[in-house]
Length: 245
Image 1: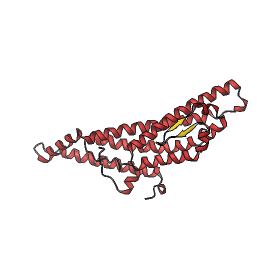
Image 2: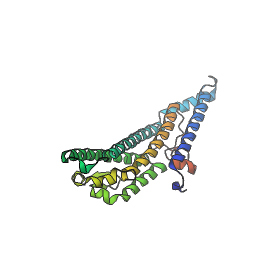
Image 3: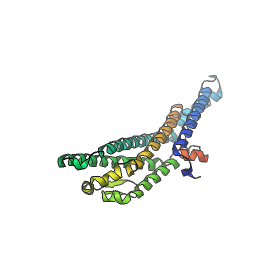
Image 4: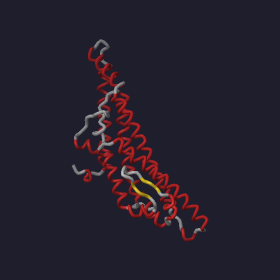
């Protein structure tokens, strides 16, 4: 399947609709079983099965995924916020600024870039930890964006480790001129601008997965799939959950 042939946002919207519909169906089925006659052997069996699952490894796997997606969403949202600040920060007539003011504003930009790198690294770690086709695709896209700006980023003291995280050499960052930094972080089509666009998709995907996870944890009906809950696996037809561990 060619993932690039389908808009991630379109797939996410479709999957969110599927997830909500599936959650309603599962909750209705469990509710019907549990609310049937108190003397029904089937009702008792279903309830015992649900209770036993709530204390098993599967529930722990759900909780871990929930933590991962919560942290993922937080990091992506912070990246969006920082990118917005950076776009505004560069929007100055630097040539007309007093030297003291220019140094002050540049220092603020450097601090924002350092924070950006921390958020980026948190996002990369959570995407890798949770896994799944969508998250792995997002990781590859982030890698591609870095490769497109690799030389410019290196000149500003920013390099990429083997695990995809960024390392910032603060001395080189401080030495980089404002025009160079603006090309990387201060334009819509810059490295930061492209990452921001992908962060929006990651937020949507995280919210969808959290919706399904919360529904499954609440109902005790564990049918969520770590490897089939994301947008690409659903369209491949893989939708059965295999708990971590």
